[in-house]
Image: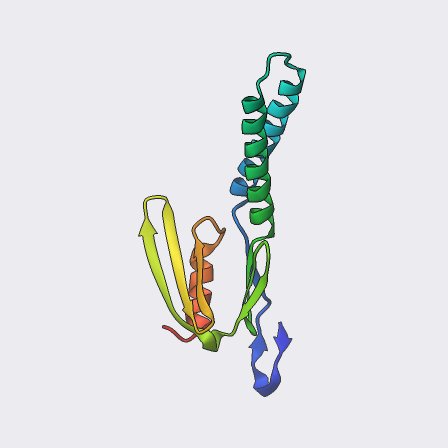
Length: 142
């Protein structure tokens, strides 16, 4: 731990990422469709629509793999930092107004309302309950 002014200790930043199982399944699906595309190259009777379909799934799973590979939520003393595919956004805990927990059929969703706009994450993140707890506690929403 790092010592902060006024005797307060800083906690080490914690990073929450999509579950390894999810990232592995998406990468496996991408690999499967690449294999299908290569197999189609060897087939003499393969249609253009078969090539287009496999190319679509390659693009889809490659994009998902890149998205899930980059996605991260980091909680530190400075606030919450969210890294997505295209941006890095930082939210001070003072800017966090409310956290709504929304249970659903496919898991739990968390809606974080901030002065800088809405933010969401779901139970697809490993440690999502702890992430929610840290945000609520550090933002003083308890």
